[in-house]
Image 1 (cartoon, rainbow, N blue to C red):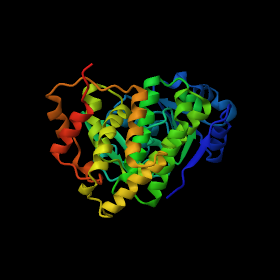
Image 2 (cartoon, one colour; image 1 turned 90 degrees about the vertical axis):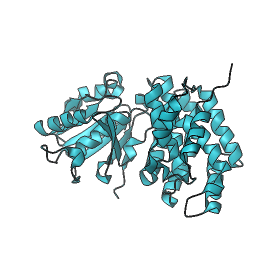
Image 3 (cartoon, helix red, strand yellow; image 1 turned 45 degrees about the vertical axis):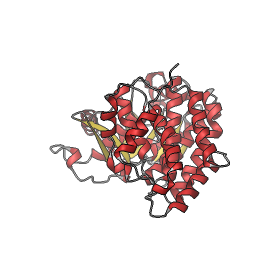
Image 4 (spheres, rainbow, N blue to C red; image 1 turned 180 degrees about the vertical axis):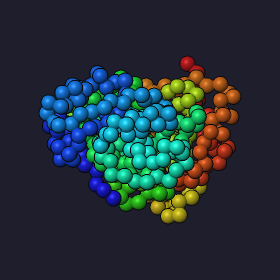
Length: 375
C-alpha cells in the first residue's frame, strides 16, 4: 500500500508549489464546492501560473449528497480539457466526487460507470479537506447518489496520494458544522476500534485518533490554529482506521436520521453512538466477534483508556458529557418514524458490529436515541 503524503500548508502554500513541480503537473482539475471563493487557498489558485507552470480547470458542480450526474460531467470535462491531475478542495462530498472522477476517468463512457469493473490508474489526486471529520481523504470509499439511491463506491486506487492540511480552511467553518464533524471523527474512531474487522494497525489509528480529538477539542472549538491542525490530523487518523474496518451499527443507524430530520451526518452519528455505546457495554454476552467476549471486554477498556477514563462506564459518561456540551439537539419525532427508521438499517453494516443487534433491539435503540424528557 502506498503511504499517503501529508503536507502542512504554510502561509504562501510553498508545499503546493513543490508538489506541483515534483510531479510535473501541467493542467490540474480543481474540484471544489461553493465555499471555495471564501477560502485563502482560492487566492493561491488565482495566481498559480505566476509561481508554477501549471494551469487549472475549476469544477464546482457539487451538491451535499453528490450526484452520479456530477461525476459524469466532471469526467467529461477532465477528459476534454486533457487534465493530468486532480486537486479536491472541500468536505466529504467534494472529495468523494473527485475520487470517482479519478476512478472513472479511463473507463468506457458508453456504459454506466457503476456497472463496470474499476481499472486503477496513476492519476495524481491531492485532497485539501475543509472540515475535520469525514476522513474521506484517507479512505477507499466514496458515496454518490444514482436515481435518488445511495451508491457506495470502493477501490484502493481512489485514496488520495497526498493530503494538504490547511488550518485556514477551517477558520470560517460554521459552529454547527465544526461540532458535528468533530463528532463524526470521534464516532469513526470509536466504531472502528470495536469493529469485528479491527486489527492491530486499525486500532493504533483509532487509539491515536481518540486521544488527539480529545486533546485538541477545546482549542478546535475555539477556532485556534493549533486546534484546527490537530483536529485535521485526528480526523485523518480516524479515516485511516475506518479504511481498514469500515464503520459499524452507529453509522448504519444514522443515515436515515440525516435524511428524515435534516441534521448533519456527524450529529446523527453521535446521537446513535451515544446510545449504542452503553448498550454494547452492558451486553457483551451478545458478542459475535470470533475473538470472544474476553477480547471485546478488553477492547472496551482500551477505548476507555484512550478517552482517559478508568473504565468503560466512565467513558460512556464522558461521551454523553461531550454531547451535552455541544448542544447537539434531539430532533422532534413522530411515532410512525420508528417503523421507517428500523427498516432503514443496512444489514451489512451490522455484520461489522461486535454485539448482535436484531430488529427489536434496533427499534428500542431508536426510541432511546430520539427520546426527549418533558420540559
